[in-house]
Image (cartoon, rainbow, N blue to C red; front, side):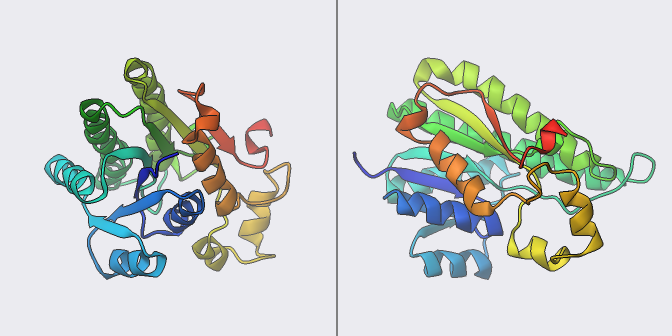
Length: 245
């Protein structure tokens, strides 16, 4: 099997790094996309992979970045839409409209811009590729104060189904991975072992464990693999059974 070029957005973040390492372990060529800056450059150098700086909310910048990647690294076979923001919280009565707008622009419009640009590239190149969106079970199960984020992830799941049914004619599969709370190093800093907040989250999860970022990455790798050749339009929970509770 020839080496695939895998483009991962949000590549400088915690889950992005796990995704990159997992695809590299499969023998893929990885390109990390994120906001330009020292963090992206540093992670790319540490992993020995190419990087491209891009603001995913700017469609012209997205088109230019996709063109750059295809020129420098070859046709894109896999896109992982991992970029997103989680930190703007607030309840229905108090959330500033500007915070809601920012969440929508990054998580929904940014995901769409990347999907559209890479899908156009795949169709033009005749690539039967795969797109994997990193969603969240929050799109199906509400948590007070997290409504803006959860609304955006519900939209990502809808975009996944929309793109899957329309791109199937071109041999392009589109799926999503929907984690529960992911046990990244940043998460462990904010919710250390034994903390009341962590215990409150664990009480909602039948398996009593946060989502391991390695397992989130493994799910993405599987959905992008030939082993998932007949799977499209799926949002796969990696949540320890939280949606069952």
